[in-house]
Length: 80
Image 1 (tube, rainbow, N blue to C red):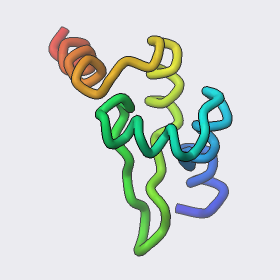
Image 2 (image 1 turned 90 degrees about the horizontal axis):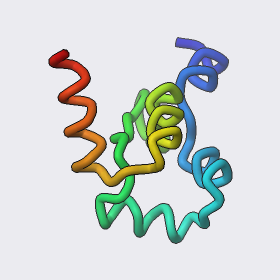
Image 3 (image 1 turned 180 degrees about the vertical axis):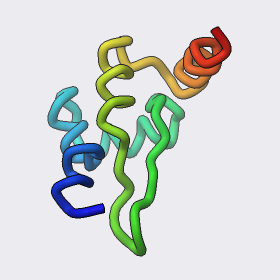
């Protein structure tokens, strides 16, 4: 996967923070508290975690539900 493909398909945490208007400190707290629904993925070796763009967009459209709510909704959607 090229850098351009990664950038098109995945978002960095800072991109998401800017989009939803929170600070890096708040983002870290949200992660720790389970308030971020989508899980991060690690691409390659030691790079920063990334998030699937499509999933982040759905999560934001859904009102940024917490991890448990998000995972339950996705599990239900997959079984339909």
